[in-house]
Length: 500
Image (cartoon, rainbow, N blue to C red):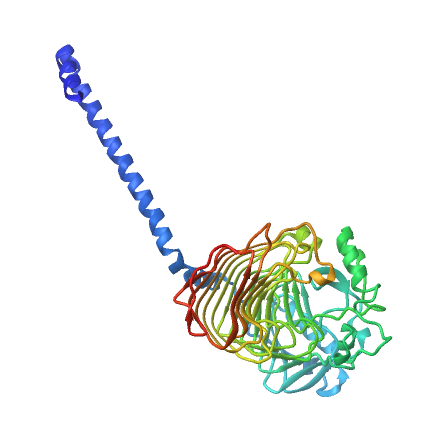
């Protein structure tokens, strides 16, 4: 038909033959180009689908490469030159303060803590200052609670407030560091800070004040619920909410390297609303109440590497605010790479939650070792319908586990329900990948998932995972089928299941 039409046109008007031929050739070329373009688009789409798994760890490398590690001038400010005395008894707060101020005013450098024991109150860092602890240096933080006043803008279990100063604190600073081979000793114990948690094993005595008393956590949580401005949430003296060890608030370009933290009052390393954070080669050896090792919160671009965590609570816990505070701030914690770390005692090796109302995305864990009969879980996600929030994208690879007590992977969206932790904010958990994991003694469960009927857990994957010695290979409720590939639990090959 097309041939007849062309012949007719030639016969009808031979003067326009050239134009018609050109028109037909042009149409053919356009059609060919469109088909080729579609083929190229399909090829790109297929390539993306094929290479997504391969590029996951390239994305982790890209995050690390984009993190700005602070650099400092080659200037030193020794605290002894500002009157510090290394007898373990003299309060050196002013010497630290003056050395840090001088360093900052000079454009930055190192504030040197030499070998010896130096007692001090809280240390407030300023931009371009590297607090450097020489080998054999120990900073002892005062047991006098008055030293941690006036109150500062800080946080307690995912809720912002005005409270006792963290032991090391920075707000709104850039290019700061705590480095060296020395020890930071919070001097918290059963006679200092810990009894406020309310547990007898941490020194609390019946009738003494504790954090759950009405004027403490219940009041703070009511303020959170009511949206009370942070500057009006004043605690500190007369209250029993313990300070954090090291907190950066609204800071950029942070380095914590080499130092050892012991005897923490509460959470140890807490980047809050901060970005470009490197935690490299630190040791956290602290078994007090809520002694989490490192808790990035509302923070972006975090690299935690070469660290040892031996803690009284979670080794690493990624957070993003509790309930109304998390929804008000609305900054997810994201782009967090954890590698080459060792986890011993702790409630969890790498944990997301429970203060997670603003959500967590893009967490990468690789080349880690976890081993302790007192390590409860390897990977844990915990939230509820008061917290809500989301977790999207957790990638775990090359992890060796000796002993773990409860579960290798635990996802629980009913966390704390026995404490009336039910609300109207349905959590969302999806896209969790475990690959190349070996577990010698898996405890009670290989995989333990408790989702919600209204919001089932989605896309959980185990590839090349071997778990030995568990009581129950899996317990899964309200979750899309867990996808198993080349995964053995108790020498039994795991098969994909139907919806539970």
